[in-house]
Image (tube, rainbow, N blue to C red; front, side, top):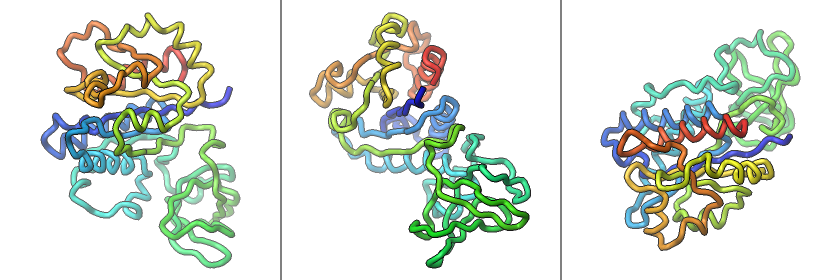
Length: 285
């Protein structure tokens, strides 16, 4: 069975109720960990309040998500020091396969995959940092200096390593998530992005088990799936109402994945973890 492409959409207001930069950073770390645990392919950060300019929140969330997804050995090359990253040290490690714990050239094997960044290049070859003691050689590439690449080891002979550009689709292990930013309102980006199945979450929606049968039928046929989450103080029904649209015209299913909640609100990062756990159990993400 072909691997499904799973996207999640989180609102810019996910950090609105968190005043301090340190806590904002920690919250995004929880979201990234949940996405990685359940092998999410894409995190979409969307503007959920048309009355407010959310550019700053969108950029902060996407920056932290991209920083955390980047292997540690490449972060200094790909990210400048800036105030938004001042608390990056508290971010939890993802510990995904593309974040290797060892960086020894002697442990590399032909067929291994690594993330790398091009340091320099000539007409014939490029020198690539793949997180070991010496740079690897990438032959005949059109990629640019400072460009990040997914690579496959083709030669590992003592102190010499050669690589070729690889596609994430060919890697059998989970290889991290991509980050997309949507400055457009929810309605516009949902209408423009072509998903086979779109599922929203809300405490006012039917319980998951009430729609599980119909959802399963659609799930197994779908290749590109989107799960959408609301904000801490404004759910998807309120977001859609503010945009003047009906939510049932935008999504295929609305589900309550935390029925009979014991708290007044369920935070976005909590709903994300609960929802992904349920979907993983029922549909093997």
